[in-house]
Picture: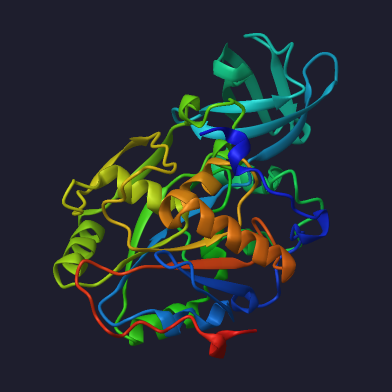
Length: 360
């Protein structure tokens, strides 16, 4: 299985540059993960596909304004910092652009001196470990000086920072948004709960490595980055009780999938915990916990495309992507969504069919 097996052609004009005014107005491609049968809806229709007793599992991480622009002390040379992972209180793993000559001891200044940084060490892949110096509250300074770290394929400036956050985000720490969750509004989540669907929240702080194309030729040779996760006892209990009662576990986003499958036992139950995960899911993987998946459309040759191909079958996924291109769906972070539907361990007859009545 090679990385090239996961390439597809995508017209540039289909890469969404701005979010829609209404989060729920995105298109929704519904596909049965077993049969490959498809329907074309809008995201607000997702509630029709959820059953009482199901459990939506969502990643409540919050994106920090992780992009900082400053100058090198002494020379005034311009520098861009991208915060990746907090190691200690004021120590971070970062990407520097340009950063090839940033040796330990090099210092940088941001915001007229309100924030300073010193390189402590060189990490893997040329990343740097830096310590920040400042007076005041770190979160307030970062909020004032930092910018949202939008992916490089988005060229338009983001007018509203909150549009790159889910409405349920609360635990700061991500360098990128769990974008499948961007389609939900508080009203829609209320309606979903009123239908009898449970909501469970976990946290996985998303790193930029999630979105990068795989660079090795053989898929199995790829080494995943690590990301910090937290699953509370309350969330684990809700997920386990849902399974016990025959409900489906519906993951919102690939980050929720990776977290659930990290903490899952072989019987599908999950355990609470805090840790780091570098789980890499590609075709051949046997899913233990997740029954259905809400996700966006992913980059060619990315680990996320490999994950959804493992979940619903590569042939089904590539046929769905081909159809989405023809129907001019919007792709990537601010784009449209897919709902990959499956059955739980206990069969019911409440499934909404993917039929002609669902066509856009």
